[in-house]
Each structure stands twice: as structure tokens, then as C-alpha cells.
Length: 277
Image (cartoon, rainbow, N blue to C red; front, side, top):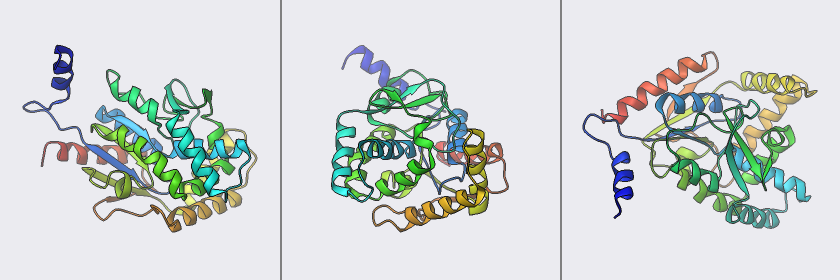
């Protein structure tokens, strides 16, 4: 072992009085505020943030751009494998549009994990950009049709298999907040801390509606609510890794609470567990 390796190992080993660096899973339906809360929690704890939603959105965007139908599961699975193995979906630090959801990718996660210090934020509105074949698609992956497409592609077993290793590699070392829909049940079922963040569908739809209007999109609240309910159904009824609360996850209702209040509560619980209490 080289001196540099010994120094790197020493940085990651908890010393006397230091807190363990845990894996924190935040799952929940669209519009529950996972992105905002996960970003704030990661910054508060000094953890790496990995939002898995954007990677599925990026796959959906790639599917849309090559003209595949959402039911062409074989071709979509092959495309996802190519995107994953080729490192074609990456993250890059820098300004990005605001969002309630975000994502992670294989090559970028490896770079982020080796960088000195924690990232300042997560994908999409968090100081990072999502790149597809080198193009900044941070805004494009937030379009309503791509959001629904993400639910469709995430139900394909071959897609989930292609992307699972990316997510696990990103969080393997601990000191990470991962957010998505199956982090605590599939990606990291042994995560030290799990939260399930939710809110009534009407509140989640209003958040999404306000976000889209702020971006200059012409949408109605009724159509947005319909999209939220449709996505809930797709996410919870898919055959592979459906959205559900892990048995040992802490349920958090964000409907009538501020993000800061939720972040404070979560941070306290993570710090207690990090001390081994």
C-alpha cells in the first residue's frame, strides 16, 4: 500500500469521537419534495447526494429521441445497457434549473466519490447538470412526457438491471444520501437510515404545477394532477421494484411542513444513528 493510499484510508476511517458515515435512503412518490429535502440533508451532513430519478429520466429522453415506442421493451433495455456501459449519462457540477427530482450516473458518481469534499448540491436545481452524450439535458428531462416515460422505462427489468450497478457503486462507501423510489427496498435494502417521504396527491400536483408554470409551460392543474396520479399508479404497480415503503423506513409526511423542518428532523435522526445510538 502506498503512502497516498494510507492517507486516503485514514481520511475515511472513523476515529474516536467521529460520526460514522452512513447510507441514507429517501424514497417516495413524485412531488413529495424528495429532491429539495435530500439536497438540504446532504449539505447539512456533508454527504454526497445521489438522486436516482434523473438517470431514468435521461434514459427516457434517449428513448424518445431515437423514436422508440414505450412498449418496445427489448430495444429499450438494449439502449439502457449501451447508455450505462458507455458512460453516456453523466453528471457535471454547475448551475441547473430548479426541480423536485434529480439523478445520478455511473461515470459521474465515480468522479464525485473521489473528489475532495462533499458536493454542494444535487442534480437539477442543485448545482449539477445531467448530461446525455455530452449535452446538458437538465431541463429536457423535466418535461411532463419524459417524466411519464421515466415511469415506463423504469418498469423494464433490463433497464433496472443495467442501471442498478451505477446506483450501488455511487453509495457503496457510505456518507451518501440517495433518493428515488426503490433505494431502501432494492438498491440499498441494508441502508443504515431509511425515510419514506410522501404527501397527498393534490399537494404534490400543486407543487409540480407551480414548477411547470414557473418554467413558462402552459399546463392546467387538472392535467398535472392526472399525470401525478397516473405516475403513482405506474410506479406502485410495476412488476419490478414497485414503489413501496420499506418495513424499516421512517414515514415522513411533507404535506404541511417546511423543507427545513423536515431536514432538521432527518439530520437529527441520522446523527443519532451515526453515533451508534
